[in-house]
Image 1: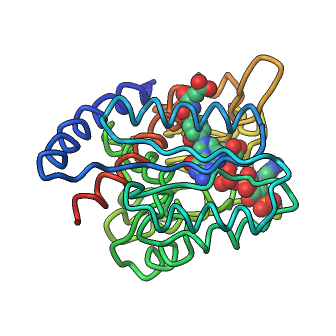
Image 2 (image 1 turned 180 degrees about the horizontal axis):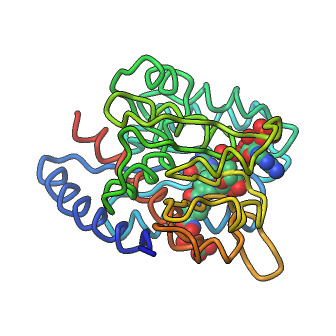
Length: 279
Ligand SMILES: NC(=O)C1=CN([C@@H]2O[C@H](COP(=O)(O)OP(=O)(O)OC[C@H]3O[C@@H](n4cnc5c(N)ncnc54)[C@H](OP(=O)(O)O)[C@@H]3O)[C@@H](O)[C@H]2O)C=CC1
Ligand SMILES: Nc1nc(=O)c2c([nH]1)NC[C@@H]1CN(c3ccc(C(=O)N[C@@H](CCC(=O)O)C(=O)O)cc3)C=[N+]21
């Protein structure tokens, strides 16, 4: 089994970004990544903290807006408007999920699409559907990069994605069915009649449901590439969607942690740097 090492791959991307940020600074351009975090969910706070420490590593300025859990939609809107107007903020994200009383889609739509570092604004998702250049969602970008980095064949492959969420499954299906990737994709969800039968046909399995142990050894075709994306907080820290014995049959395995997570952060920074380079 070949381990798809997200940390080592992240380090390669950081090395490249560090050079590109230095070149931008020589031209008088300093990329700045903003984060908007609402509430005090410890998981979300950790991710946001890691994103800011990544920025420091590659030389990107970071801008942080932390709002209380009971913030009103109007106050959240004001923060988004402020970052849209701030020239020092060249890209930013609104960390999801937001507390239930807030309208997440309204918040995402209010982001200036040119500053959408996550690639989750409807304009950018629409551009992905239309096949135009746009900021791409970070986790799907990380998954495609990791597969390519380890020469896992994508063109013509049967890919089964478990989960149709907006951050992972849905946009990944759109990316993998582009002509440039040319995979055949099956998107599974809670309405799927026979998940095991679908997964068994896959050359590449992407588990993005957030259900610990959902994908078991008996469901995986020997030699298949398996990518563990789901993240659930358990008593012993965060766990993915794979049963441990999947490693016995997989040909390639992206572990969790240590797989797609670090790449999600790398491509967030990459989106910000690419945008600044277009200035
Ligand atoms: N490692 C990383 O970098 C990242 C990890 N994540 C994690 O990835 C996971 C997916 O995130 P996101 O895209 O936002 O998706 P959501 O969490 O919004 O949705 C989960 C999806 O999984 C499906 N699902 C849930 N249970 C089952 C089941 N038993 N069988 C089949 N399908 C099921 C749901 O189906 P239905 O639509 O029918 O409800 C839904 O489509 C989460 O655990 C998230 O924490 C997210 C971003 C980055
Ligand atoms: N607007 C928005 N954009 C996101 O991209 C976004 C979000 N909201 N909400 C939550 C999910 C989750 N997510 C992760 C990021 C990094 C790791 C990551 O780096 N994980 C490390 C472990 C980190 C640690 O716990 O120390 C790993 O897998 O090895 C995981 C998950 C981004 N998300």
